[in-house]
Image (tube, rainbow over all chains, first blue to last red; front, side):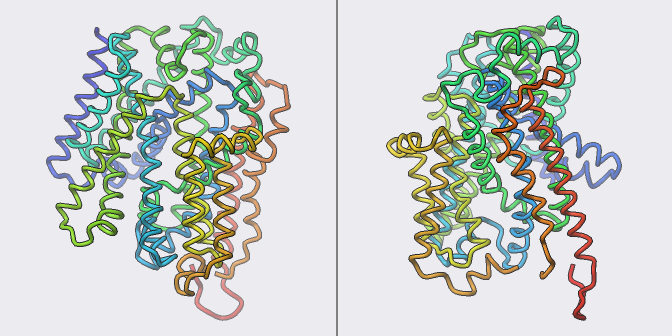
Length: 487
Length: 76
């Protein structure tokens, strides 16, 4: 019982604090205060915060779960941030320049200007919104698992998932985006604290000489784990699969709805480029996450749901109160990003689809309400998906990325190729979407893909159709082309 | 900006390391310190990427600081 008390006390306390701050109308959130006010200390704090940000539900539960269930295939995750920032070094400054030159702040606005089409911008925005739903599903999966484990199986999965959805909605409507920022900082502190504690104590608790011994022991017990295709060869996680997933997530890395805005808010191109140098290094922390997944494999080899590997390792090796702290931290790690995601979904829908396409004459109040309704619908859709799904967290992320990456070909071609047309992007994106949503198409893609991820095959189809249709239709006006291609 | 960007092919190196060379990295059965080779490969890829991006950035900054040969205002 004590573990439950601590876990929930954490969440309730954080929510209360963040609500208080939000309600008091503070304009500056804690992060800005910390960085702007104290230079030297600020750098350390910033590093600390960035280190904490790496550990999301995906990292904490998903990556360790994949290490537990499959072994080597999980290592593709290292390439996400790495290649993401390599691409970003070129892509982000271009976005920044374009936004300054043409005074645009959203992806939708860019597509509208570049292809002179409101409907295309609506479609692209809709794809972005669609992709946010499996992302929210991922967080809800993590939250509901924590609820189930912390309550020691007293709660069924449907109840836990519904409760998770309710917590997220409650958080959205009380704390809002400002409360989310503060809660994020508390989460980061707990996160790093928990990891340091586990790093220092796990080896002795498991009876190992040092933590690296995990690798040699796992090697002896499960020799397939160290190389592709890993512990379950029937899943076909081959080298080709590995490469396809890395490329697909790379294309989708910067296509999320809120990232365009975040990039525009940067102070300068140099700030963006310097950031690209150091951000990949944070991904080194995944080494430790994988290590924990492998430790779980040693300690508790027969779990049915690999998503629970890390939590069960903690439950197995640590006292109940520590499980409560880890559970509470995990809950924050799920609830806060999930709220931010759904809030983003709501605002993007309200500003870019509702106001632009559905009701251009609507009042600010009506638009705000539309955003709220969209956030709730998004939450309900995510809950529904979570209830129906038995997927691993990483698998859900790959679904989200297979969707968001379908914006990639259109976006990148818009920045590099004069000949690309609105019709090309439209048909390409639709083909890509159908390629990941229609079961008939995914089955066909799997049959021709030589084990590559079908999302990647859909991406290739998207690209091909975009190019072919573009060549068959008239190119945009010179002014529109210059929006994207001008150097 | 008519700055020559040939040094940007350095940015291809992370892709070569993390994508093209994977089938070869996967075949290696060495396990330094017991750690799977592929794991070490991917982590080395991270450090390599930081180095490459840093190199490209410093060359970019150097080129942007140079005054143009045709007399005109210095672009930053």
